[in-house]
Image (cartoon, rainbow, N blue to C red):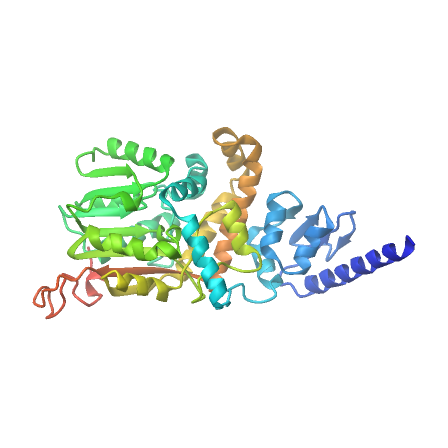
Length: 434
């Protein structure tokens, strides 16, 4: 009676091992696997070695469940020996197909909308933002550029360093917005103040930034004081829905923020921007977009991993959905630019910087955060940065800058008849010499 179950288990193990051996043979990087009992499968001189502590984690690899494998790594059920760039080349090949979802059923869409509504109250958004951005300022400083710009850089010239490309991005946004001295400028989700300071110091605007991160708010307050900008720059710990609308802003930017808004709240978000923006004003939305036209998250467990360990409540939408909701709010899109490969390069720069300082990152997380979870947080971010770099390179997610205006209704306002704003309806001004 005991031999049959044992025989069945052995057959399942043999099948699993044959599957793993077949996968290893087709990988672009020499990869070895160490089994729970110590046996090694794969080439002796492997660039990547994955050591599994239990068979369930090995089964996740065989099934191409990359998100589950990532969770196993964070939880120490899998150990990694090798470069993150090599590991991501392996992960991309292990996937059984594209991780971009295509379920268009009405019931699925209804459930997603209900989930979106439940995730995005002002209180929940504040907790979710603090979960990610308040990990540790010193930790982020290890791998971001000196201005701590935590969004896609703009490699205007291929030889640019990350710091140069981030400054190029800040200036690219300011040029697109046609910022002028004395204008009232709002930065929604201002982060560590990179764009806020750049706009004030280089374009002379009266700048207001908002954030839900307590760490970021405190950091920018110190920057304002040290730079002597208290009269022209202010940073508020505030939800965008709570902003006063009586004075209005000439120009508005939102960089890396609308990913946190949620599908259900997108109409509210753009309607709020419309009310905050003066007639004829310009708004720039810069953010991550989905490859799929169906509101969803990445498959193969990848979206679940990001939701659990990195960005709880984050939702990505296709550019067409964003443009629809923007137009429904009364805003007119005047320019849209896809910067997807720029974000792949940005993320690899972040990943390489973190990988070069792992011991230091571990010490920082132990001393500034929750020490028992420090190793787990570090492993999660290692996979997150490298994994996102891979997904941008593969084209599974994108990055768009959307420039829009609130039309004045005056047909003779602007350079061209019917422009109804100062926007010149050509791109020449964006690239002219400073």
